[in-house]
Length: 241
Image (cartoon, rainbow, N blue to C red; front, side, top):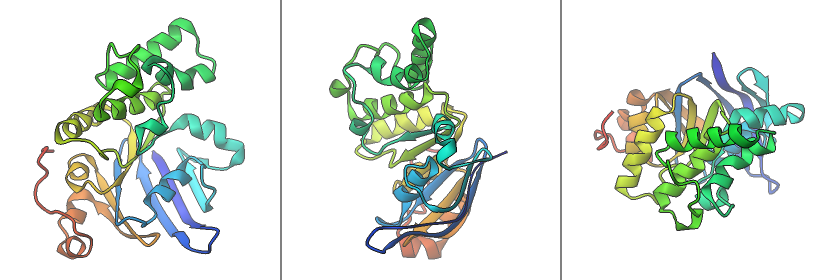
């Protein structure tokens, strides 16, 4: 089943600059797509279009449902967005409150809520962190807690902006291990080519608001032309496949 599809997607900033131009791309269920490209290429703008945060021109379908105002509530239950900066996602006094926030807002209560939180924290290897303060966690722990906030919602499509930003090598390795255990459709955007090469099934290369290359990860990252133009590292990923 097709999890995500963008058809003729465009978005223009108020100053007239085109952030997205004629984007056509799709992701199948349980695939992991990596979106790479230089700063300002439009990666984050594309991600924000997936759940309707940015209202782009063209069509976006999430599991067959069109991203439009009347469907926003359903779409935002389906799409879990993990921000680049965990501090934008973790705002409560405890990890439990942060992870419970989404399902509680949709009416889950008491034991059901405790179970969802426990399951989400277990998936990201943060068991026992319920009463910890987000402000006292390491960068890697904050990132995993951010992912738990969308896992508790049972979101079917996870969208992660710059997932390895500000992480040290050990934290990156741990995050990779966590993501590999999550059997869901994922869309990742960023610059960490070795990380993406180890988890993504497909890669889309963006530049100046356009998709300039799209294909299997091995094909994209083994292209000497793309490597020369965009600085891709074609050496094997240090984390392994």
